[in-house]
Image (cartoon, rainbow, N blue to C red; front, side):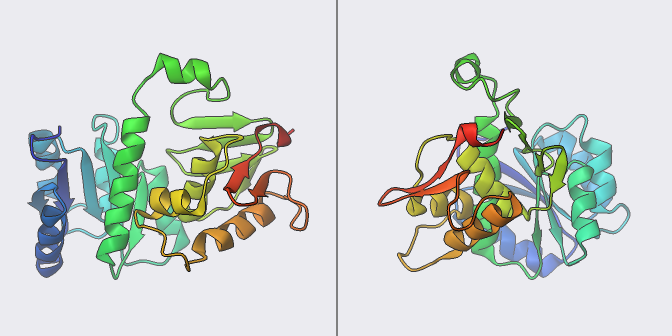
Length: 246
């Protein structure tokens, strides 16, 4: 539940110093923060606080973050963000499969964490049922999936499938593809893409988005020299072509 002064976040992290730093940083950015330090804390605080966003450390005393995800996902309807010191892809995949919406690797960069938080909360707002949106976008089977011909996207699991085959995308690549697919046949500028996927303003120099577009085209079997699926519109940005996935 949101409070009058901001969004409610529940942070479960056993590193006391890190908890204090994140509490201060998030509070300064307008969020209400409740804190716990163990798996036991997590379970009763979720019921007590009912936060808009739950931030869970993967490794917690008593009950780890994956177990908490599995235990609360059916009854807790907010977003879940996992913090992990592990660079093992299997841990990250397991977190998503257990119901986490995203994860951030340690050591944490506060601005990156803040961008992920804003993205998840924005996505949560977008996922509220809207009959108008459904009618306007018949390609959307529901608020968490999009399909265009042979391309199927699921924002909950961050899974993309092309012709029935799963495409191995990083969370950042998926977020970019999802944003483009939510705005089919509409060019999105580099400024918009940076702001929406990274939570920061474009500085006129950063080429992260361009590099991710190149990678997406390769993974989605788009022609690098003459792309047909994600195209460049000169002077306007990048455009997701809705009818190119058959």
